[in-house]
Image (tube, rainbow, N blue to C red; front, side, top):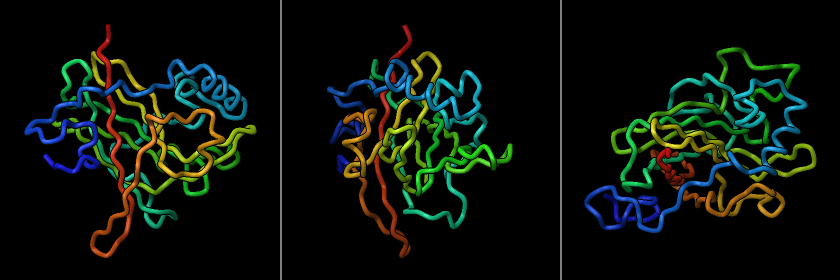
Length: 221
């Protein structure tokens, strides 16, 4: 295991095994966030959605492909790699086979299904994917850094949506934010525990940003 705590996420530093740090907390979920759900409900007056999609937010779409690259070729924006692990809070071990749905806006804060005049094709999914964690609970995907946006008078800081599912564990619906991003003070739904630091990297002459986002699930009662 890497000794770099920023790369190790919530793993116990210096351990030969993948063990969750003792003070780790369950990942914040927007399931019970009433102000956020009211905001989502207001947004749905402009967008059509199924009951499931309405609960997940106005821009969620079901059926995204399983893949590790969310953005199409030559998509404008800073290349971004997000990686991490999904953990079980009860036994402090990574969860193999957890499924993650990911979706976000583009560089200028627009989602692919935002325009009712030009909706995406049934099989056209931009900045969306589903991902399975490996045997060590690890996931990774590449995309471009999303931009902020303002809807119905509310600023949203740049963020990425996550839905994380694993049998016998409570599903988490959450969002990832970026340290130093714009509109943090104006976004009423941002949570400190969901903000990560991005690090500048370079590979084969190509510069990109990388961040670690670990997710902790609670077992169903």
